[in-house]
View 1 (cartoon, rainbow, N blue to C red):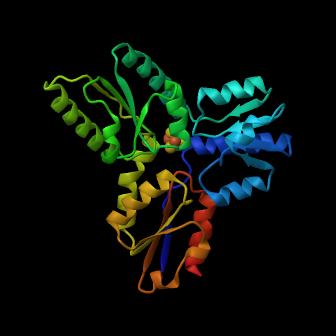
View 2 (cartoon, rainbow, N blue to C red):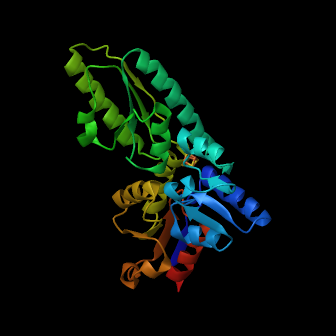
View 3 (cartoon, rainbow, N blue to C red):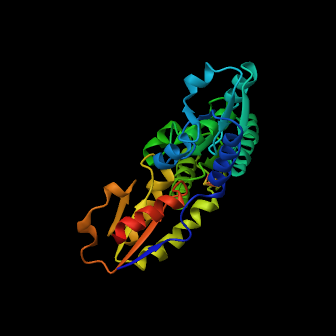
Length: 289
Ligand code: SF4
């Protein structure tokens, strides 16, 4: 049986950067706090925990003083920086530059659309860490849309500036944008509605979709490796499953089932932008055994 690991799968540069920063800091100190899981992958979180990286939530963060806290690639709302300043917390800011640029553009977009009495809409997952950071740029006023069912939150009679969470699917974004435009046209009874569309999906994620489709087509069975909390993992798994129905989602090697591989002559191992390479290698070894 041939087992191939997808060379394009694994950490994106934002996650690589956050982990490098954490490891550099941990060489100098035994304890470093991280606000939320550094990456949506338990195996990698556990590996870094062994080196002294302690994950805390936002409630715990508020009660800390005089220490160092790492901010992960997802980015944070302005409130987090304010608390750090008040509590003498030194931030190791590993927010991804792509997310920081999006935060800045949302802030500018919000100020501009506010003058016209309009709304900022973010296509993303309500409560997701990155989305919380984005909504924070608008004083909590941005409207978060996860899918068509959420569109009733929007007032279609007003101008709209729409952005996307970086890890959403491109098809999903353009489907939502089209639906919003149609509803604005209906509501305002004119074609030239004020809809500013910002496709802010990260190309580190979107470029993986066509590459993954090609990869999974080449194999009888595909094992997709990802943490269960990863949005990007869920989305890319679906891309693989649609292309090759013999695709299975696992978080670690214990979830592999012998029956999946009975008739397979080739197996592909791939994963999300939050999946460590070492975990895919470990799973490839288990499959071979
Ligand atoms: S997916 Fe893109 S935006 Fe998100 S952390 Fe990775 S590089 Fe940054």
